[in-house]
Image (cartoon, rainbow, N blue to C red; front, side):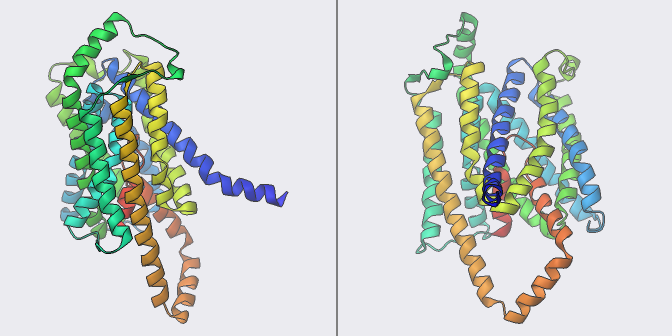
Length: 393
């Protein structure tokens, strides 16, 4: 009986991460379906931020009521700038790109965020690189491989693929016409998604600096979502001038589902990722990200009739290989750094640290949740891990 309970405990992180990535893949499809049904991506961002604020705010109020730093004008200005990066610029560009491409393409391209963040952190000297070390070589090679996979997905189409789960389905004539127009906009959508990935990486680096002066990550995320909602509302009114009908989400069922599911997913995902990160660490979460891409591809080709091509599948595989190289190099750096810090700690300091740890268990739990909640309010969870790595670097 004890061995069975032990097996359940060891399997729990795997079951949770599978649940999380499957839910993320479903979210990608729901958002894509809402965009296909004509929902404005700008309005979608506004509603998503509103629900995300409602979900996160109670946790920030309770967990950080005694640890929240005093708000100052410089900190407020930094938070406003962060909200312009994420969610306003990132989400609007990413959803616009998804609208012109496909859900599986967007999910695959998003895997380049760790590589871009590594480049920016290296440039700003937040990330140390030693060419002679294997871990640094892995991160550099992984970045190059990831960029190559992105170019392969964008510029090489290849042969059309039919998988068993599509049951040989054929799209109707209207879908063929839409696909023809869609093809002309594919390059523009790909540029938008890649630009969104650069903005996401820049946001993570900027957030690493902001957290030094305002370390309350749950409160930071709540304020960021609220400001992002206001800024996104201004942008939506500017872009959708005179189109009051776009604010009515009851026209299509998929619109309502996208808004509600997206907001609820954010809150539940933060809690699950906090549990996984506490048990197995952030690298474990990030290593599971391709599962979301697989789920998105299968569901998208089955229900949204998204067509798959050999060049884009190969590009996605190359991106995943590059992602794992970057993550492996970073995890090796973290283990070496942890070992070095442990060797430097004296025995009496270790004892003191253990005693202090007993008195701050609740704070550490709050910090674990905060680290998760400081990530994107969207379907792509691996940005959390990149933020963790950037902050640690």
